[in-house]
Amino acid sequence: MASPSNPPPGWYPDPHSTGSERYWSGAFWTEMHRPVSPSTSNWSAPTPAPRTRRLITSPWMWIAVVVIAALGVTLAVRTIRSSGDDRWSALPHSAICTPTPWANGNLRDPTSDIVFAPVPDELRVRRVTLTHLGGQKLRVAVEFLQSPPTAPIPVSQGGRLTDPPGSVSYDILIYTLGEDRETVHGILTVDSPRRGSGWKSGSFGEPGFELRNPDSVLSSVETSGNTVTITLDLQGQDAYFGGEVFKPDVSILVSGVGRRTSIAPQGEFITFENQECPWNQQAASQPTPGTASPGGPPMPPAARPPDNRTPQASDSQYVLPPSGRYRCLVNSGALHEADVACEPSWINGQPGRFAQGPVGAVVAVNDQGVLSWHPGANIGVGSPSDRTSLQYGNTYEINVWTVVSGVDGTRFTNNATGHGMFVSIENVYPF
View 1: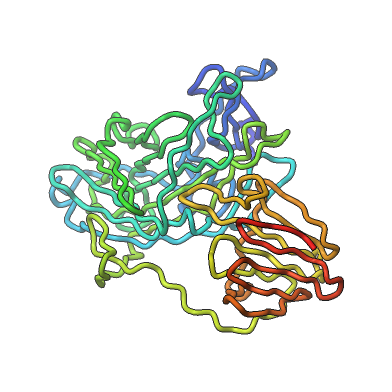
View 2: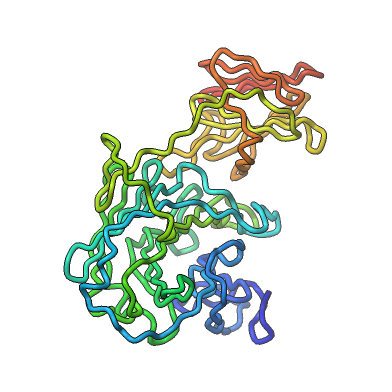
């Protein structure tokens, strides 16, 4: 909600770029841009006031990459007590990263160009490892569960570069905390490429608390396997540390470009769940062959225990084929239409596709065997109790559907009508 002194949410001239507009949430700037509209007034939004909550649990808070409002922090001045050497004494250190579900659930408002979605495994971060390289240099190793997202290939639209649907970018936020683990002294950001620009470093805070020349902090970025390694030079940035031993929390903010609509001609702005990597959520240190990561102790890959349970009837049940190349949602018809919807998995940070459909599109069939395609849709993830892992050669009764799992694909048949569909990445057809 906008404060009495702030204009309501909407498009306004971008204070940092001429010739374009930027979406104002009512409290802070978002990362959505569009060409300038002749009818827009010359208004510049005020700087958002700091809040008192740090974790990002509300979707609208996430959108603020102007992180003062989004993180909800209180900035404070501290006398620099630690020397340059003492501040690094807690490193190296690895922290596990976990998604923080939206407080209001996953949202898709047909009247808005913003979508709030769960973070898929293809964009999940396993852990972040911090290592002191000597002097005032810091290495940050971000290890993804799968291959890191690739840099978007921008296209020209309306005379400006924009990222096409299916593009993914992410921001790494490193914020130093006081002894109470609540007071934030400084926020350092590293942003992945987007809209034709390369990697960038930055800083947020009230005057006197930001890093000096933050765009010069970033030294290098390297990708090897599932890990992105970033080197930062923090020489002369004493204010950022707040006089404490360096024990930062880290957040990973991932966003994507969805389908183009009349409301979102450049593509919907998809905001995935924030991934928190708090200092106290330390990674396991036991070694596992072949899973070393630079700058910290090895960590075994996340293992999913075998799922041998009998599928439980519920109005909505998620079905996970053995191939992992797609997943489906089976509805019984009690609360939702009796249908099946299947979504292709992301590959290397990019949306997948069924051979006959658009990139990232969900395919659905109703109990009459009518097939439909839904570009940009998302079937969600559900709770563990609402998921059934299939095994090849087995037949399952799920809600009002018979599901047959084969090496060539999955067949869904409605028990009442005999209609349904066959699904594989290579072939989808109704019957």
